Image 1: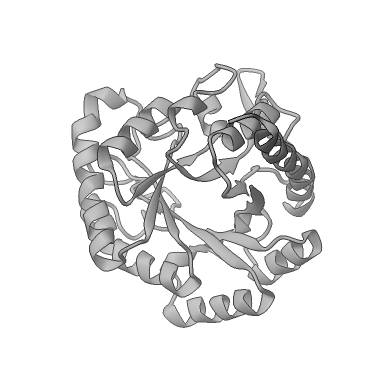
Image 2 (image 1 turned 90 degrees about the vertical axis):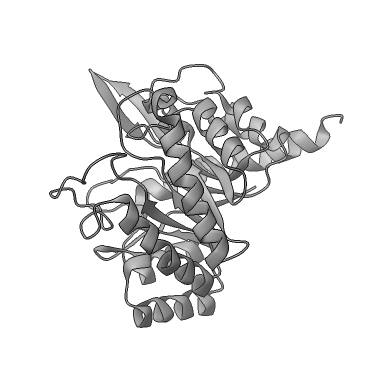
Amino acid sequence: MRATFLNDEVSRDLDECIDFARSEGLDAIELRMIGDANVVTLPAAEQRELAAKLARAGLRVVALSTPLFKIPLEGDADPDDPDPFRAVTAGFEEHLELIPRAADAARLFGAPMLRCFAFLGRGDYRDVRAPILARLRSAGERLARHAPGLRFGLENEHTTYVRTAEEVADAVRALGDPFDVLWDPGNAFVAGERRPTLGFEAVAGLVGHIHVKDPLPHGDGLRFVPLGQGAIDYRAQAAAWARSGYRGYVGLEPHLIVGRSSIPGARACLDALRPLLADAVAGAERSPT
């Protein structure tokens, strides 16, 4: 397992991200916001320029972190919401039309995965499972037609209907290809999960990518702190990932700003994450099969 980072958790300036990766010896990056736009909505010429910079820097792109389907299941999106997709495309059909554009960007950057969601909502997943799966299945079919081999990483996200390990595992098993789980233990915690494993055993074997952040109860809510200083036992998480056979990238998404910069927070999290990953893999390889 190796560490990577969502670019805008360091900087929305790609040159600064490249400098950070070089200084930390990282070989990969995950792309989300560049300037004020999601990377998949940028003009093609700008995307080509960014891809060339990353190639010269020797950085691979592990995923494009799109907000596909981070929209209400029914009705129009909030017109005041700043989401770069929803600012211009409010509904499901419009998001379906964005799949080829996102897939073309993934091909350009050499990214094997597009992050997606299972619709904004506060209700029970079981009550809306059928329409969610129907819509995501049609999205998967469109992706498979346009870009065979490209994967959707379905993220468990506390603002959507798919929040927990059990819910995202159920959805991905029902959907099949081209869907994998994008496991985010921090989001599971924010959604109310408190088991020591945060339910990871439900998604073991289904995970295509991982995001990490560390929430900590604070007053009536939560705040995010450097990895290892919050409520999540990331040593136990990493050990579980390694035992499950996961050997992919783990992406930092710490939601930390120190002063006016995200770089010190990202560096602190990276310093905590790397030894956890190395120890977890070493422990899994020592364990009898």
